[in-house]
Image 1 (cartoon, rainbow, N blue to C red):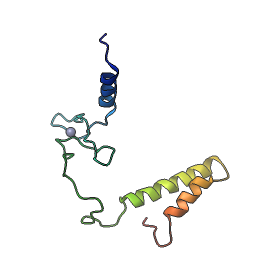
Image 2: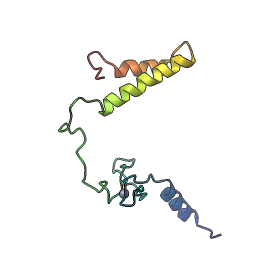
Image 3: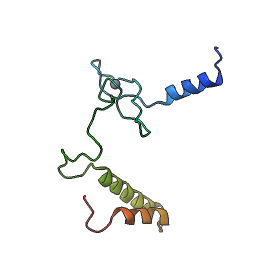
Length: 114
Ligand SMILES: [Zn+2]
């Protein structure tokens, strides 16, 4: 087996762990090309050929297509915290401070969108 320098091995690890594009190809299978890295960190969910190219997509905070807000980051986060709260209640009779406080923070009055 071929041996790699430390730098090469690191680059290969990075390439192997990069998330893959899930766009459906003409063969019906996911594209599998590496996702585009965001300048602020993390990855877009598509490759450069399937909508992930630099400058593509709506700007952050764009409200043009907002109808009910069910899929906004805020609403998703609220649902996640509510699920976590009830999951913890199922397994024990008390809820940890961390879960409780984050839920209270997320659900400020008049803020519940779902
Ligand atoms: Zn792709």
